[in-house]
Length: 109
Image 1 (cartoon, rainbow, N blue to C red):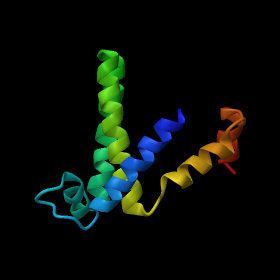
Image 2 (image 1 turned 90 degrees about the vertical axis):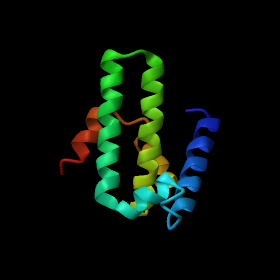
Image 3 (image 1 turned 45 degrees about the vertical axis):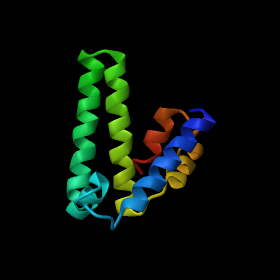
């Protein structure tokens, strides 16, 4: 990820967070927040499935679009549950340089 990519994701999260408590008649994000965590989580799942489908059967630009949708909905979920991008980035940084197999095995304890 480039520095610009991280900035874009942070800006997305800031925009999403600012919509919390907004007018659901004028903001899709505010509408998602009013529907609650369960609906937001469902949308993350739907977007993840759509991303997988695009990866298996569609052109790369469709994967790009679905990935953007997934990151947007994931940002809404983070804001809903009180997770910040910095927390996710810190977790990824902790895992950097660790074998994926070793990291996964460490969670089984």
